[in-house]
Image (tube, rainbow, N blue to C red; front, side, top):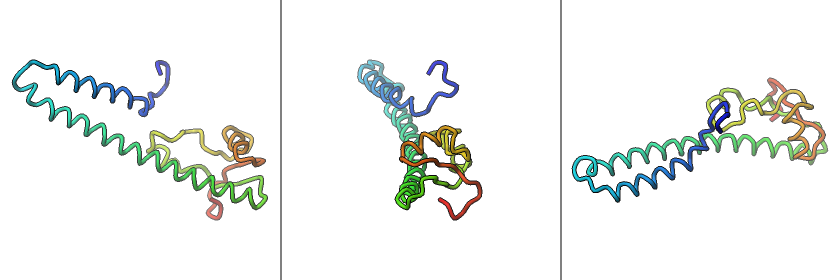
Length: 141
């Protein structure tokens, strides 16, 4: 992660959990009376609420990408059952979805070139000859 161009948000989950445990442990050991100890539960609840809200947003984004890929997989398998081994699908998941989604593999979606990665890997995974994206096609998933 030290040389990564972008720190993945999902990697901070464990750190936040350990921080919450450490803060609770610290709160139990605080001998300080007064304002700090009195307000600590409210501050802790606020921080935990903010974390849970971000977790809920992440869950929504991850589910959105999962649903789109599930639909793709069903379409690819249906084409394979029909004997179509050179599958064409609608051009990649819309950029508006990918840019607003921190958990999508940006730049690694299906392209128009069947020989380019990740198209060739996806084709191998599904046991078909090739897969490629087709721009502006409504009749193809």
